[in-house]
Length: 201
Image (cartoon, rainbow, N blue to C red):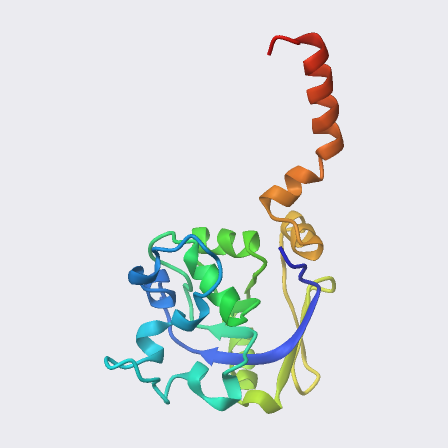
């Protein structure tokens, strides 16, 4: 998993409440177990019309936000079914941070396990960042995980809270497998001792 330290990029405004995981990545794209290739289908039903043509009105299809790395969204982001493909699709598109007033629990946890930083903020702070995001590519936002702050294009700073353990994992690029491998020496020592005491095992 890639480390998350400081991210400076374009933020895309998506002021829609209750964006569920089927809106993020529809069910017909869940046949793969690969984490790559899903970005093109992110927000599929909003990004494309029935004939498959891109919808020019959708924010991520517009030139100013086509390379957005930060998403400023409405309340209750990631609700619905617990599909890990949702953070995979966001990450494959290039989104590394999602900002909202609240997230569905399973989606929130899946983000951390896939290198995406979900940030919960009060409505007034989300509104400020939404205004910044509406300015497009001319107004980049910086997310500093170590300092736990977001810097707007005009120098304003918004602080955010994060669980220390999850912060450690993101800063060091540790998913569940990476956390286990941190204990590799202890695991190897245990296995050696077990082999000596139970050679038949």
